[in-house]
Image (cartoon, rainbow, N blue to C red; front, side, top):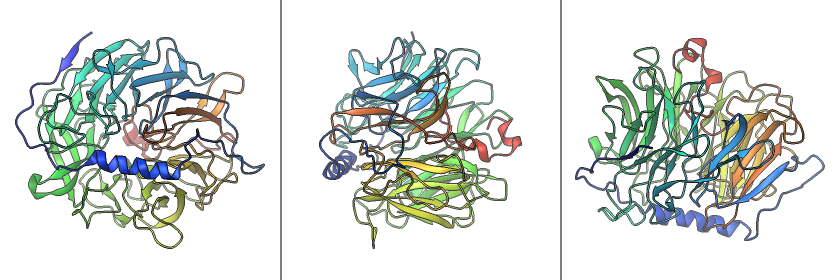
Length: 530
């Protein structure tokens, strides 16, 4: 199998020296203060409670990595990563490991690297060939491990390994190489960024580079692109210009003085003259750790790029804090009514889809209530929904800091349109899409379960027979390891089959993690590489 090493890194500054590990450790400590030390309990608040799990697995710690449901070896499978450094591929019907799985993500022989990126299931060789599972490696929660990206064949053998650069110490922020390639926190997205019909693998890294790889794991000509600071954000890919199949790359990134920007950028890259070119970019006076989502959110029919701002540490990035922005994808112009204020930093990816009671797509996202007042307090979270014009539909308070979790949108009751499912450090919550009220007897202090969830659930219709078949929701939770040494995978049957197809059923909407709300797009976009 080919093993690709990135070229030697040019001399450059290490970027903004932010003590990210200290920040995340503080968040973990805060979560630990909220959560019980014992394994999570399954709440049974009332006769109308959410159904009990069909099956569950006990695993290593799972923090940011979200589960993906896809067909692997002819079986519907749940694919996810853990901080123990393993990728799991589990039969969605039974909860059993598929043959050849789990597999370690090894960028150094014999040493698995912790996973915070979500595995992407990609048809790199065409839709009729077996899929490939691609995952980034590295973590701020787990020190002294190699970062990079690994691609697996569906039987668990390694397709290729790709190494990023070693330019600084990502755990102490010392501005010099430390012997460890920088992490890939960004979830890979799959699409044709050159317009030649090839399925490319796109991701960012803490080595300041934006990468695009071919199906063999080699660099697409012109990549990587040097952004001069770390990239936490995951890319969204969509065709908006150029040849019919060419997909632009929309992504966030940190900024420490590039073009006079201190905070973060939102980028639109297109591929021209055999290299990525910035079409538009916006400097915001705050980091962009959120991952952009793309969808049509108003009557113009124009796709919009929606993304939240993070938390520079320590400040001084003040004026851009606690906001979600929306820009038209074709020219970067701000969508009227946006940005909208949030209760605090936004780390998760927005979900886009029509909610119960509405007729046009809404935007749903989470924020950490670092500055909440009235009934909320520090240590709680908000999940909120807005119309495409930026009007607040509803907001709901969750237990525990929630700046990492991302919502999904699906119908839970079988009637009345789409609802929201979202996790937090305090557990898992079903939310009424029309009102923001808790469903099935849950409340701020009584979630479906108390398993720390810093990612997204995945919802799918599982083929077969028996209790594991039909519409199910899969939750991977229980990390980071500073909170609990035990992770869990839960398989919950939905209370009722959805009355409409879920518009945003998992992290980044689909198995290719392109971040596009396909349900909102007109047919002209759906058939042109979007």
